[in-house]
Length: 287
Image (cartoon, rainbow, N blue to C red; front, side, top):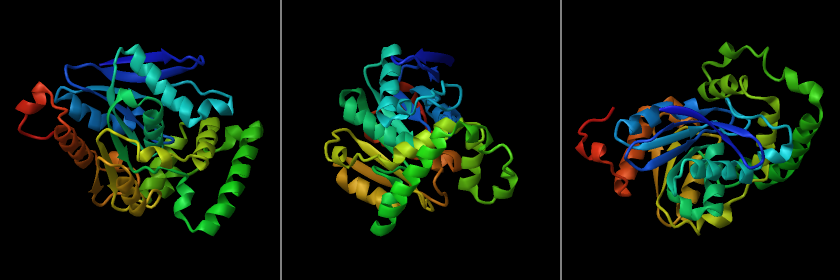
């Protein structure tokens, strides 16, 4: 296992953890505002079976650069980072796994670099503005208002240093999804938090789903309210070669809350796609 940095074409530094084994390469993309640790347990499980793994900190998160320009946080730019990372590692293709915001990056990555995808795994994610699953009237009112508010926050640097340091995180421990989000957000730059949220409001990859020509697994937390099950089902219906699995008893952060079941579903999917390794074929138990 090695820790490295990629210098991107626009001059940013992307931190990533990589382990090269003999098996197929899996790239894990974390959600907003997490970092590579969100996928650590699943990655370790696959590594024991001989798979190669890459876990980056997306730009603005973890140990990666935190650009000042709002344009540096476009979904397209995130996808380009992953492509440049594959080029650096001399990998022609990979299975791309993304949670939440990372799943949005997965869809954009496929749109831009379809030949670099062996398969996609989309976890607790959605193909368009997350507010779209609300009533139409609410979406039409809330989205432009929130977009305006986020732009105001981005333009007022005096607010940037005061976003979360004094929030009593322990009070939210019983609200697991919110607690996990707050804990990660407290370690993420204000610029990244707001710029990524603003980018999600304009996200729409509906057109690409019918064009996906690789196997796709959709994993959805049973109690996820941020990207509800009905939206995951719609996504599965639009993607030709897709399957959907429900992770029981968890909400939006299935990969963090239940890494054992998520790892099992991923491995079963990879086996079904023919993504075997020598070690995995000889394995009889699940770690």
